[in-house]
Amino acid sequence: MAFEASKRELGELYTFFRLLADGKVSLGTPKAQKDEQKCWPVALIQREEHDGTRRYYIEKEDVRIVSGTTEKDGTFTASGKDDQRFPREDFRDAAEIILHLLRNVPGEDVEVSEGLEAFLDAVNIYDLEAKTEDRTDFSVAFWHPQAPLTGFNVRCRLSSMSPLLDGGRTANLKLEQSGVKFAVPTVNKVNALPESPTEVAERMLMIERLGGVLKYADVADRVFRCNLLMIDLHFPRVLAEMVRIMHLDGITRVNELTERIKEMNPLKIKDELINKHGFYEFKMKQLLLALALGMRPAKIYNGSDSAVEGLLLTDGNGEVLCYHKSERQVFADFLYQNTRFEKSSVDKDKYGFLERENGVYYFKLNVKIGLIKR
Image 1 (cartoon, rainbow, N blue to C red):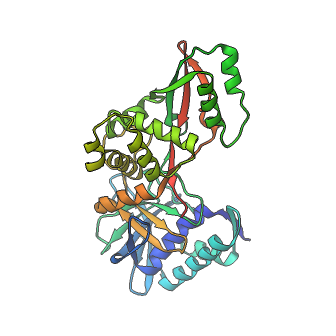
Image 2: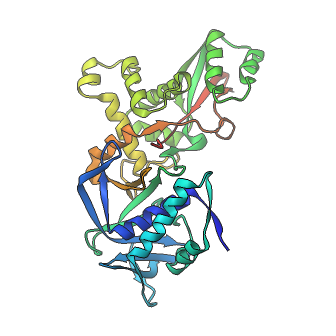
Image 3: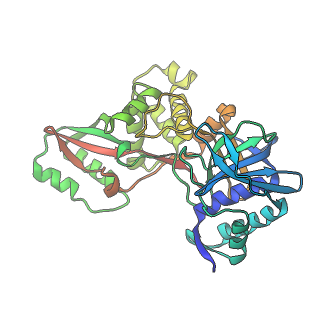
């Protein structure tokens, strides 16, 4: 009996199978292309399932699967059951089947054939998205099986992708409404504008037309405020300006918004700092790297990286590209050139309306950042 899976689940599985079949991965360039000069051999992949840990050792012709458990300190203990072996070619065939589904089946949910389901059962894969507490999708040992494991997040451009920053209500920024003091009926009129893809921009423009001014005030969540201040003490204001421009001007790509911010210079810093030192680009890259390596809005960030040490990106051709924190500048440049601001749900994340707090009206904007599809 075939079953349905989301393309996002299959994208992670495709990446996993491709690494097992190829036994290597190319490093990516800032433009999300394959670096022909840099390729790292993959010796072992560790993946978590609901019933324990699986280690997939890549040998010359086969993949050897060892089941066991992982302790909190990362120590792996084999279960003692007989190891399983499958030809690497089997994983290549399975990857090709998944790639065909990702490319050719419309919609976000896909029916998995009985043949592919049987292969997943044979290689002990029951959770299509790996179950981990440290937010890694799986871990990889490069060069040889005794090498330290490196935790990765997986993104696939042939499916929907999890955002780098999707904090919900904790990722809201507060703009104070000043200028003209609005009466309650005026506030109700602004908030009553109908739902539409541009409703947030329309409300901001209406406030402006009525003589109101929206000025950055604060980050709604205390922890997220402190996390952003770790990037720069004035960074929340820069971020708020970028989100505002995204809504009003329809510019979404991070690098294009940063160029606009350089022209506006909301922090009123010297031209030398902007143009020679690349202040705004540098700060934005710092944020993107922090997000890619584990920063979350509602979790205290102290500058230390998490278990996530890199990102594996499957491009539109099915090529898997590796970005790792050891290649920090390339990783930062890739994120800067390949990310965008996105609009989250207004109702779910509670932003885009005038709200009264302690006698003052605030208008919240939400920060959501994800990878571009192509």
